[in-house]
Structure formats: structure tokens, C-alpha cells
Image 1: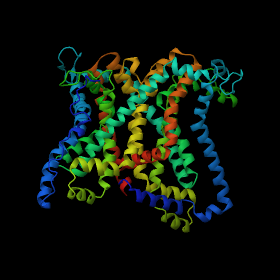
Image 2: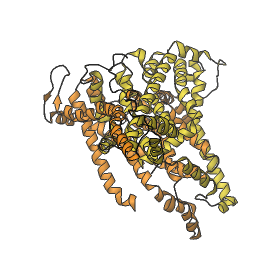
Image 3: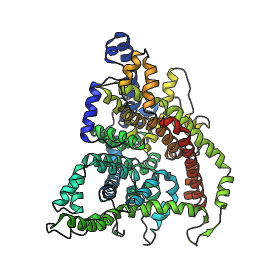
Image 4: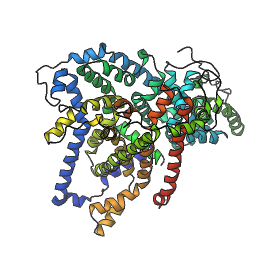
Length: 309
Length: 323
């Protein structure tokens, strides 16, 4: 499925609004159809509120409750009458959530830069420059999609331990996350498909005007592909934020660990109220990020399904 | 961070040679040839970041995995070739049958909980016109929660005492208290329940995107033939997205076969190995027992099983998916 251009997408959106679905417009007006449909609609909405929003709201309540309140009656709202906002501050500074969140942010930011540089440059080569050896490289990159991630876990760890040819070790540096994370065939595929859809007359015209390959890349291809780069950026930051096993292996120094790796350790050593406050702070940023960029997110996820299909 | 060799790191595009010929082209044909020859070099420079990261961190490790599974090494002395003995060692490990069974059970349960429901939700949500986005946002919310946070939160929900969150809900309708993670029978289903909650939203959104390409003319015709809502869903909607359904099913199976974070943080493989998975075994081989050979042998085995499975799956479903 080719990536839709902006106009196609707008047409699609318009078509969706005016086209009928499984249930016709005439049927939708009939009470015998409308009433059950409304009931199902409300039931599903309730179900989604309970399962999607419920745990977050409960966690927020627990984050500002005393340990006793949470343990004695998990559903009561502050039975002892104490609302402990200070839990959040204590988790932030004493448990070091602030510090670990900063680490996580740094990791995600570096991952974003590394991923964007790698996937735009190689997509430019494969889609626009099209050298003879491009097909081989493309094949080799796509082939990695079919190798389960688990296969390279141990060899990759050893590579990080002793970078072959240099004798350096990337262990306990963020490069150990950024560089392997940038080797992501899926992002390259998505960006390349988008580049393929840019009319090649633009490149010809720029070339006639004397623009070199670097200028075509920086002044035409990159600005035109902002929508897809935004999607890749969001998915990359999110994936980096959620990652656990790999940072657990390569960042053994507790001071530089991201929040995911630090949390299970912190949870063991702190009381329930601080634990809940820490969890709440840890999910706040991704959730807020999602609520702000929800359209881009949902489009990006849908797109990934299109590429897989 | 300065200790890192920056050669060929993602910055290389900044050091591409400045465009050699800024003078206006005399003849188009010639300038095009100049561009081609220049483009040949810059293509290599542009490809360097990707070639570097894939070479070092993807292609070489894949080859190394196969090599190391045939070797014995303690990382100090030179590795020695040991043929297939790593594989026979792994296959004779008494925990392997348990881990393989658990992994299969995990996958089976994950499909049971996590395959039909997202499909149903997506088909339903595609019928909502204006307010559909609220459903999408709510469904996707659990997916954006970092897995570690979700797992630690659910660990509290799964408190086996009567005061535990889930147990006090069940207690309200006269069930329980259930032991959840503490019993060999309920630990695995409990983990799958959380994993399904955490991932179902993503599946819903992917189906939803696929459903936007369903051609709607056929509904009209089916309606004239007197077919009801369910029959329209079954005979028109689902067949049109079966390609996506089949791929998602395969990806779900491959993904859940490689589950690590949930059993590792929830139970660490316990109680009594009731939740140990193949990935936990690999982790233990490599990072607890320092047995690199066994760890890579087991990961290569798992990859072979997954590869063989997807091959058989593709062949078995080919006719159905292209009809």
C-alpha cells in the first residue's frame, strides 16, 4: 500500500464523512436500528473508559493517597481525609524520578536524531539517487525485518562490549542504545515509500537550476517529507521511552539508567505511596505527548499496519 | 562520550564534499553526466550512516549469532568450534519443555484474549463517524503507557489478599479471592491479561486504518439482497481486510513468542517455573550463567522455529489471502 499523499488523504477523509458504512443512512434513522446501536455505543464507551482511563485515574488517586489508604481500601477516595500531594515531590527528588526522566529524555532525543539521520539519508539514496548497488543494500536492509530481534540480542551485546576493529566499549554509554536503535528497517521502508511518492520532476528542475545532491536533499526532500518524519519521530521517541530489556543490559551504571530500568529497583525499596507517585510521574510525559499529538500518533500506527500488510 | 569513534557515525552527511561545479551548465547532457558522476560519490556518502549502523549492529550480529551458536567461548580465551553440542545441550535442558509449553500457552492465550476483541472493536468503531476519535484515543491510551510502569501498576492490582484491587471487585460479586500471580495455575493467564490490555489498542488502530479502504458499494447490493448487518460484516467487511488480518495474526504470534518484559518483572519465571519463557531462558543462559554458546543456540533455534512457522503460515494462507 503506497503512502497516501496529502491530497489523497484529504479526499479519503471527505469520502469517509459522506460515504455510508455497513449500516446505511436510511437504517440509521430507524428506531429499531438506532436504539440498539446507541446502547452498544454507550456500553463500549463505558468499557473503554474503565479499561483505558480507569487505571490512570486510579493511579493518580493512589499517587496522592497515603500508603494505608491505598492498601486498606483501594477504591475509597481518601478515607483518612489526607491528600498527600507531597508524595509527588518526594518521588521526584528523593527517589530521583526527575533524574531518571532526564536520562530517558536524553536517550529518546539522541535516538530521534540518530534514527532520522540514518533513515532519511539511506531512503534518499534508495529512492532518489538510485545507484546500481542500491538494490543490494535495500535487500539486505529489508531482510533484517524477517530476522526476529532475539537472534541478535547476545551477539549485539558482545559487539557493544568490544566494538570490533576499535577495541572501544560502548557499555554504559548512550551510543549503545542510539546506534543499534537507528538500524531500523521499518522506518527506512516507511520514509523511502514517502520519498518515492514525491514527483521526480522536482528533482530534475532543481538539478537544471544547478542544485547538487546535498541541496536537493536538504532543501527539497526533507522539507517536503515533514509529515512522515513527524510520524517516524513520534514512533521513535515512544519506542525509546518504552524500551526495557536492551537498556537494562547495556546501561549497568544506575546513575545513567532511564526510568524504565530504574523503576523496578526503586519500587522494591520504597513504600507504596511513593511507588505509586513514581509510576504516575513516569507515565505522565508519554500520556500527555500522546494526547497532544493523538492524530499524528494514530495515523502513524495505522500506517505501520499498512506497511506490514 | 568523546571516546566514541565518530567515523561514519550519523553525522557524515555534514562532511559531504561541497558541490564541485557551481558554474552554470553549458549543455544539459554534459551537466547531467557530471551530476551522475558526482552523484555516484555522494550516494556512497549518503549511504554511509545506514551502512555503518546496519553493518555493525544488525548484519554482523546476525552472522555472529550463527557462528557463536557453534562455538564454545568464555570471552577470555579464543573460541573453539564445538559443532552442534550447544544445540544438544540446550535441547536436553530439563527446563526447555516447560519453557516451550509456557511460551506456546502464552501465545495461545494472547490470541484468545487479543485477536477477536480488537477486530470487533475496530469494525464497530469504523461505523462511528464523528465521535470515533474518542474511542480511538481511549483504546490506544494503555499502549502509550511504558510497559514497566503498566506491569508494576498491575502487580498492585493483582495483590492476592482480599483487599487487592481486582480481588475486591471480584469479592463484590462473590468470587475469590484469587491468588493471581502467586499460583502456578493463574500466573500465566494473569500475565497474558495484562499484556493483552497493554497491546490491544495498537491492533485496533491498525485494523481501523485498514477498514478505511473497504469499498462500500457492495453494502448497497448486499442490502438489496436482504443481508443483515452481521452477514454484511462477515461477507463484505472482513474479507476485504483479510490480508491485514492474516499479517497481524502472524505478527502477534511472532511477537508473543518472544515475550520477555512481562514474565521477567511480574514473576521472574516463577512460581516453580510456571511462567518461564524461552526468552527468559536465553536471558538466564547469557547473563546469569555466562553461557554464550547455549544462549545463541537457543535464540537461533527459536528464530528457526519462527521462520519455519511463518513460511508454513504464508503457504497455508496464500490461497485464502489472494482470492
